[in-house]
Amino acid sequence: MNKMTRRSFLKGTAMAAATVALPNAWYSLARADSPGYFEKEFGMTDKLCQKVLAEALSRGGDFADLYFEHTIGNWLILEDGKVNRAYCDVALGVGIRTVKGDQVGYGFTQELTEKAMLAAASTAATIANANANKPAGKFVQLKMNNYYPLEKLLTSVPLESKLPLVQSANDKCFALSPLIVKVTANFHDQQKRILVVTSDGTKAEDLLPRNYLYVSVVAEKEGKRERAGWNLGGRKDFSYYTPAVADEVAKAAVDRALILFEAVQPPAGEMPVVLGPGVTGVLLHEAIGHGMEADFNRKKISTYCTMIGRQVAEPFVTIVDDGTNLNLTGSLNVDDEGTPGQKTVLVDKGILTSYMHDKISARYYQVKPTGNGRRESYQHYVQPRMRNTYMLAGPATPSQVIGSVEKGIYVQDVSNGEVTIGAGDFAFYVSQGRMIENGKLTAPIKDINIMGNGPKMLKNITMLANDLEMSRGGAGACGKGGQAVPVGFGQPTCLVKSMTVGGTKA
Image (cartoon, one colour):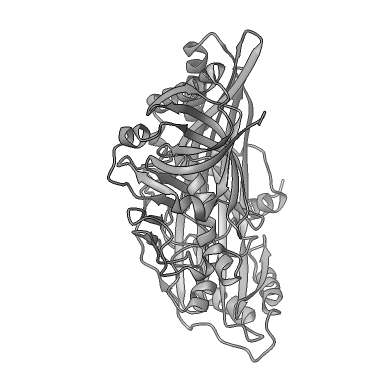
């Protein structure tokens, strides 16, 4: 039997998109916690990067960059009391981008060889047709903060340490209620190593963890069934996943399922809507945040394309997009173009002050990039994308916000949303909520949608509470342009004075 080197194994695994569990021996070898990882493990020297960048600029591109990725992901799924799936996948490759004006040429390869990378660079270069440009003669390592430190690499955590976590969550769900008839517990962890090298001389490396514990349950009562789920996670160290976390996820999933047996359908029509803190921030993300991504504004698609410097909300409303929150799903030490992680104020005291920029849009608007250049993997080009998007707390208390509503609904969580980016029109399914009657929370509700317009909703926020919460989940991802990237969101309790509420019978 011929001996296989680790580099050959990883390359072959990436090309085959394997979904089989790898032995722990391979885990311990695949270390990615020290500077120079891609050079040490795959021979990606500065000299080789300069040669590839030169090829990418050989036809006159304005600038070019290389995006190396090595990702190891693990899934452990327990269903019906048994582990029925446990698998791993590995991604390894490089994406090569050439930019000319606002046009992008892109090539990628799973083979980290000089021949394959030069071929991909030649493909990217065809976006331009002029005299060659030269990359920087020297790369400077980017200094950056670490917003998701790890005590140990996720690839060093054995399967035996994860099994008790999903088993505990499973057992807790059944113990909480005899109405629970089915439980699925899922633990996912991912370790993503990137290296960004740019033609203007920046070199940035990062190790991005991502993980979550997710539990879904089915409850049955008097012939009726209800389903619900919950997850906790983010860019966490494995030490975060204590028995208390497993208990919290299980209890939240069970409680959310059981309360649906008591839920009613509210009347349809226009009414005040109170959005609860935390996870309802996904509505802010979808209905408002996407319209503030710079590419939609540069292309005149977004309603906000002419609104910089203008009032878009009440003076007590401030919205930020932030890559610097500790351990949150959307946090970034550096974006996928080599721009350091940072906090961007989008709406400052009601005034739209900034879009979210990648390098292309920043150049168009003659501003600095905001660290929002993101891509799903080395196979994808960069787009302006959100990180952790949230609204700052206001002056009221949650009870004051709810107490101001005579008749309306309180939304705890939403799902299955649809948004039209240009106009900002949206519709979301309310998965958890309650009626508000005479300033009090009353019956739980289900089977309804809320509909409206993002810019109009922003203007219609009339009260904000002092209870800002960020979503603590790690399973969510945002889709745009055929790409999904992990994001975070949050907000305080807020009152939207009028939205359209529609039940299935309306």
